[in-house]
Image 1: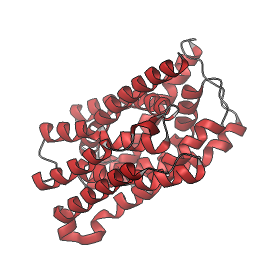
Image 2: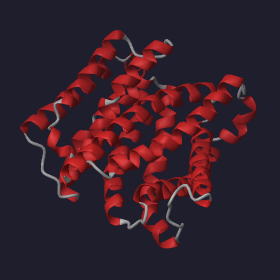
Image 3: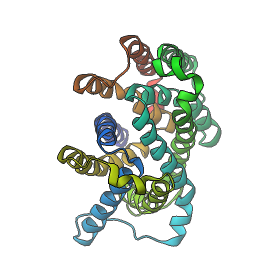
Length: 302
């Protein structure tokens, strides 16, 4: 019975996270296109989630741990990586299309699966799993070779997204360790609270440091842009909860692969809503990446 309950909870967590993650990526892209201040956009998202939890706790709707200095210190290394990964994510969405971000992220499970094995005691990927991960890399290489940005600017076109890949590999692996090592009365909401409470300040400093404060007056604050900012901030609450909930039930490598596989929906939405997307050949190679991830061995999810 316990195994069945765990499988049901894991399945629901996977579905909810996949839905939130797929939609959130496209919503963030649209928001940053209208308000090209990624530091400000993400800072508002963090503060919205933090305030929602504080209100939920005060009203008795949520059971959430108190903020303590000891737990904050334990969370600090992860929050640094989290803030850097989210900021780099925003800069990639500001300068590149959604497909470029997805393709580079698709390469992260290869490294994460090895780190998962070394640091978290997981089983090393079997032959089928390794072939699937190699297929992801082949698709990524194919995408890069036909990408117009790469053809015009070479490797320099991928500065932000390369930094994002390095940071996300550490963040995905270390986050799994955080869930298992820091003791919370409410594991999911406690993790969400600490992540957003500690991330808002550093994200604000990154935004100010990159000159966003001086750019605020230059932004065209349209009704559509403000509406998207509100929408992405509200969806951020769902994304935070679903991400930590899913992390707590599956392996770090499986969580990373899930984040890649569910982006098929993101690609479809991105193609449907506007013309800021990759070429048909680029999308083909991206789909090779995503389909390869499906053949990753199923039993690592539990």
